[in-house]
Image: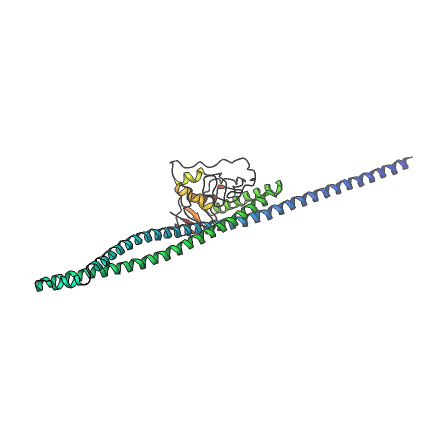
Length: 367
């Protein structure tokens, strides 16, 4: 009997061991599956973030090109309109000269060529003859001057007409180029929206975590360089209107507290701080949304007309002692310097206007 009990106990222990091993194996399998799922989501998020960043670089370049095309169009239109005004002025002057010449011709026809001979031959003295001859000479010189002036004016009018046609063509070309850039950019914005919307909630969260980590790393780099950095504003995670994109935007997390703006209304910094949290919109200059140069233009002037592009800002006087209110820029992106290695800028799709570290390689310029 004791032997049987021993055998049964041994069997029970073995069965329990097998069950425990099976349970442990199942746990390991579930853990591995979970790890694989997390890894897949991380890879999905990394790939999507890389795509979004690459598309944002395209949008930044397109924004600069778009602004330059609009500026070139405006300049051509100014020259075209100036030529048109000058052509009108010249036409009026030519008509006046032609009218005077026509009147002289009619007068000569009515008087006949003998009238000039009568004037000379009827002179009572040499002095009167000389005086009459001088009068006729001046009349003829006046006629010749009118003819020359008319010829010069017609030549200038012809040149102005050439300029008008050339600048009208240039304005149309630049308008078409700007429209093409805007169309391509809108397609990119739509793709970005679709890419973001197509992500799972987990992947979106990972993207926002990655953005926050990148910003924190940039802050650390600034601090390591010896700058005193105020607390940066986390990415708001919201989507811009995409320059008019009608698709639903990703939802925003709870807003984070912002550093207090400086006092003294109307300053560059106050205007910049006042727009924190506004969405990014390609080609937008306010007030509902901004792209990077549109935001800088608003901060500098308080107006919603485009002041310039990154190319414009790159040509401004460069400074080595940046002060709050200066412009931070490279060829593709720009912002308003707020001190401590930080800038306010319209960052990107899904982020909007935030405070963040000045990007490596940016220069500081002063309007």
